[in-house]
Image 1: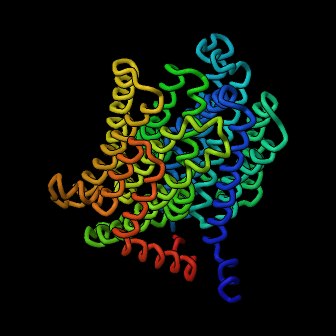
Image 2 (image 1 turned 120 degrees about the vertical axis):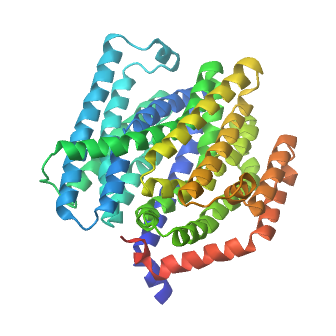
Image 3 (image 1 turned 90 degrees about the vertical axis):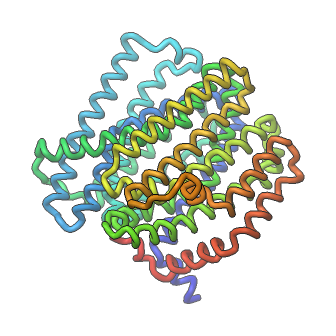
Length: 482
């Protein structure tokens, strides 16, 4: 009983439980939505989500820059007020830009959108974009202040409402209801943020602070938009060169594959300010030790989940037989999305050390490679839609290696290419990963347990470290506080 009481009073556990419940609801709703809409309408919904994601990543780095600056000035209340005032000024400018884009669509139009029957729904998407940018900014401020309830509400409102409407509506009515949920959920989160009064208003708006946010935010924006465009560009290419039904199968596969890492993303978000605070140090040895410790747990756990999902997904698709043709792309998507977790620790270290330009260049180069490889696969080699994701698999390999390379360069650790590769992709994870790739391409579902078994045998120490860190979080929830 004392253990249970400790759990229910633990803010980190409560936050993570809320996120896992939300992810379960999100996972369940995605299955219901896919089944009710069918491949054609799900292709349209996937395209609308693609537009929402384009707007979401087009944030000019305002929220991310504010997050880092507030961590760096965590004990200066006056500076915090000025940062908030400058950031909100930038958000107003961003909202006006979105309004201009909506006006352009209304006057001139975008012919390609007709394929996916966007019509007037585009204006709703623009409204969603404005609310999302404001709420993401406020969410980051609340997280720096260690207020996780509001953060959890903002992250949970839309997914929970999506599940509700997915149980009620079908076909086109469901499509319109899903967009309405994005508006309603964001308004509710905004009201909560403003009502609870944790934001320090009244700061003087100064041009120097706006320039600081834009300067830092611009390269963070380039990094974020290029990184997220890696997968969004693949979706866009599939949406252009393949049928609506095939795009629906591809969207379903990626969404399902990404779901296995969602709870790790929740954990990384909640600990991000603490990690940034630790990594802004100048003590190289302490930083190396810290990075190795967090990577041992986070990256190993991600791969364990990926290998486990390869066993489960073939049976899961029996529930939604209309999506069974997507099994191969689903498996390849799982083995692709797990790769970017290899950069964990090093990419955050570069941000904490104000190396936004470095990670922006890495992401931009990776994005270019991704688009070139994908277009070659489609236009030159004529591959099926299932194999286009391999372009992103190769891209993530390069991206994560470069993050490790330049992170170690900043730490003044002069290791060779081989050692950097070992640090980027430790053999205990590389071996089962290569085995998994081979089995997926062979197409024998009865062999899918082999990579997971190899993972368990080779990663006993890492699994023990994961258990120890979980115990620490349970016993000392304030470990994440600034």
